[in-house]
Length: 69
Image (cartoon, helix red, strand yellow):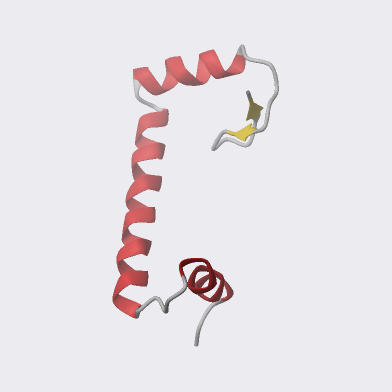
């Protein structure tokens, strides 16, 4: 069964997306999430989060849910 996301992606790129590519994409997304979570507690991530908290609200969404410029 094809998911709604897969159908939309197929429409955007103009060709079918095979199962192997979808699985590889899922692994990359999970890897990115793991890196983001690990980076959030790293000193550099804390500095960036503190800085983002000093900025006016904007259109970018931070993982924690706040909106920054």
